[in-house]
Image (cartoon, rainbow, N blue to C red; front, side):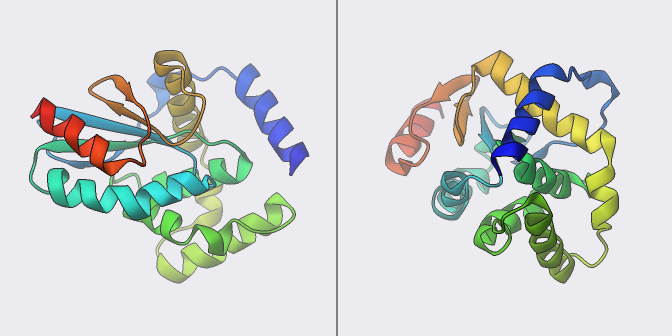
Length: 193
């Protein structure tokens, strides 16, 4: 796994990608005209990100997103090759719907296991194919446009917000500390409404 992380780091830092060529839709929910915009930078192999999706996101959805007060965008910030591959799967349908992303976080422990990237991919494929019959797993992994989009989201997060860890929450273009503290997050959003 250390070799995979090293290879991924080398690719990331020396691989310049152009945003103009990608036409992949952002994974988002909520009223596009909402006054409050949340952006979450996350890695699909990050346990804290999975916790955010299981514990904080449902409250955000109920209290603000479903009411049209907040829009939320989920941006990829893969910390390793397994997260990069899972992000490609989450974006593969290119419909902007984050349901597959939520599904991958809810079932993270079922696929983020194994000694090699091949093991992890095998578990990921098995899980996804059981739930998404119309998804061509191998084609999604090989899609260069999706890969460029995912890596561009990561690069943009570093350049624009100096993202160093996941999950990182941005509220109206400002970093929010401690995205797991829903009480504090709710108060912050309420002040902006």
